[in-house]
Amino acid sequence: MTELDTLGATRDAYDAIATVYAQQFQDSLRDRPLERAMLGAFAELVRSAGDGRGEVADLGCGPGYVTAHLHGLGLEAFGIDASPVMVALAHESHPGLRFEVGSMAGLDIEDGALSGVLSRWSVIHTPPQHVPAIVAEIARVLESGGHLLIDFPATDGPHLETQSYDHVVATAYRWDPDRLAALLRDHGLTEVGRMTVEPLPTDRRQFQEVQLLARKA
Image (cartoon, rainbow, N blue to C red; front, side):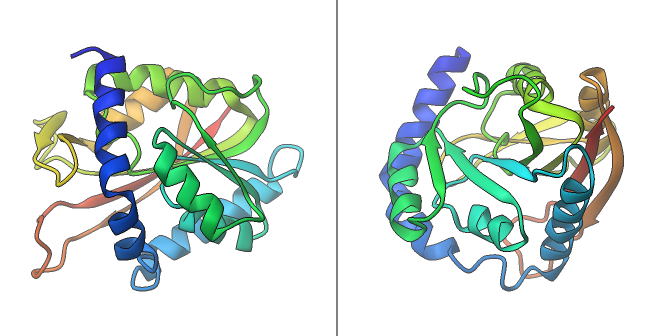
């Protein structure tokens, strides 16, 4: 399946469940103190680096609740999502913020225009061979000193660079954290920290969750 085929299938799948998704996950950060802390650190670094504008793209923003959270942390945050229905819901819930329909592999953003990029579980549906194109786009739009925070599920060990798994919406992929960090490094994004969260015994999927923080040199 080509990159465009994958994007189209994922977009259509999220369009179909957008309303249910928005209702189910609108308060998802409430019970995730570690993730809130990482988002707070990301926001602080973005504000203190580069030119201080704090303009951040939330890629794969869905219904916009994390974009709004970033805005509340003092960032000029805006959201981009491939799903028009998700973007419409984001506009409805957060009318004062900016949301756009777009592709992570072809961002309508000028070179070096952003102080930060958040990719929260937004690359999981992209086949691994197409992820380098997305990383290249992220590196292109970040200014020197800009930061990326990227979240994803980890593989079962370093012997597995990637693993596919059944997702409710579409096929998804897990990454070995070191392999993804190396991919970022190949595009000029140097890891400055990571957080690994262990699953709870009651979680349906027993995957580690990883948040990688990287800086464009």
